[in-house]
Image 1 (tube, one colour):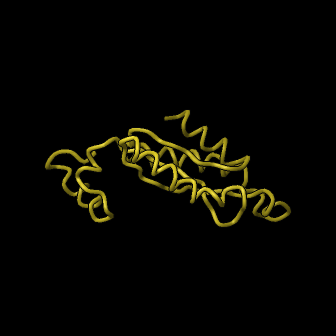
Image 2 (cartoon, rainbow, N blue to C red):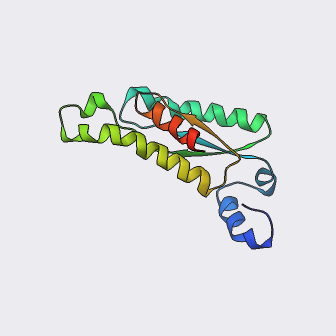
Length: 128
């Protein structure tokens, strides 16, 4: 994804956000998080992602974190928003799969914490 003269533009994007040549020479591990500030079951995942990224670095990889969506039945039930809950599993799976394939990650770690985000992340991993 970043090797060779024809990938200089891609390297420049990564360098602009702090990834140097050494980091880019290691396995790139996507860290997919369903962190969101709207429900307690996924709220802690931002802090957990930091620990996962530290572990990836310690193991010799380069982590790249990205987020996907999460919908809470507990909050949306009884409103028009409740129609979005089941659909969210597919959107979660699709967004993780697309990001992992688009950036050609060497591996992906998924962080999830509720009854819609867990199946969504597992569906993505099964597809990959």
